Length: 555
Figure 1 (cartoon, rainbow, N blue to C red):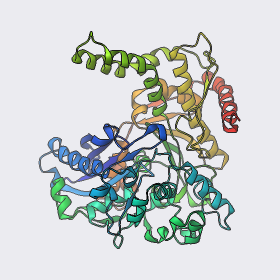
Figure 2: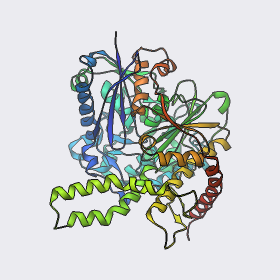
Figure 3: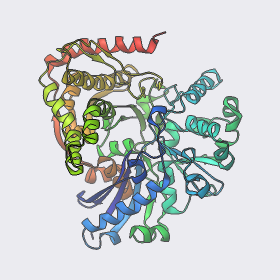
Figure 4: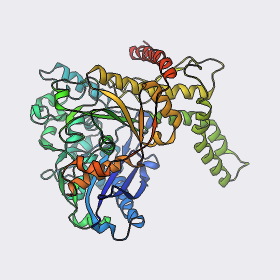
């Protein structure tokens, strides 16, 4: 009998649902819903690096994206769903009260950004992250040694401390902080109350400083030494964590009715999007999986023997079972990839958009049409011209740190830079420099893994950029000097979630068995151009020198 797995992927802008036939691996139906409040820019202040999302965006979009799925799926498909799993961006925590209710869901906090989910790209906690890093470096046990040695403003403890410092009202009402991925599973299974709440291994290990060698989290005195506001917070978190092939619980009657699903469907422990995307790509030792979107997240795995006692410096953590059970998951990434291109597009289009919007000679329909065309064509036109340039021809060297640097060696205080501009420099030349910068930033990650003894022999790419731009992907292949394979699935992260859902639902004994049937095929590959790769070796050295200058500061 046909049965289905339901994977749900919460990205920065939208949530995607994917229904997969667990017998054949066919992706039967998919649906995308954009967050309404986020789309309006509510609760965000980009100039202050503040990016917050309202929990209602997540809950309302969940109902819409699953209900809409049944309009495209085969008749009766909902009754044949055997498992549900989530992935989300992260680290994206929210303050909850003693009952486990996200504060922004309470009337008195409904419009308070500090009571909302603090999105992964929120960098308001730079100072707090630096304090945590300094405390770990001076402690008798370095509690960051399995998280790359540097704590990031993108991660749980820094964000929690920043929120507690910023708002006395939120501080007074807060019992704990919960990651978005763990919150979703708890919502559907009715386990949001602290007495029943449980956490997945992925978020806890990579962002919340959980490690079994110190019995869960660093001791309370470590946190109170940073700030007394953190007193007791670690004790609100469950000491045990679980890999995503395990079941959190079962779908409640309330949410079964809202989603049009049977009561009691098993729900798995959630993880971050990049980790589940890597599962859809059949990640294995020596293969780096890159999720290429607004930012990048780079995932690989290693055996216990290969990692042994090594602590990989400057990455986003090494965690047993965070990707697949029985292997150590390793994470890195760039804080901006597509976001850098989007920044440049916004910069170039600002005058034209304002002229069109304020024109008295154009009616509203014409304005809307022109603005849409400008938005659609900007990067296409730039790419068509930039691809005609030879590597190094324009003399542009750029950094990709427009949103700080995630890895290697997290530092959200650094900024991007452009060097080599002349009177003859044009927009496509700068754009090519920016594309090369993102490829160089990714190469720095690859080289850091290799320097630390983690093999990277090939790359599998997932995400919108990998499917939309031959130009970007070929530059990446040349800069990295290795083969890149692009996955066929349009929803690789949701597919990874569906693979876990099928395992949790009992269709497969192991994740590996589910991958054998359901993992995505490769639709395209890129081979490096040997001549270009040689040129990029010298251009990468210039990128490193510019980065060293910016790291040193201008004072």
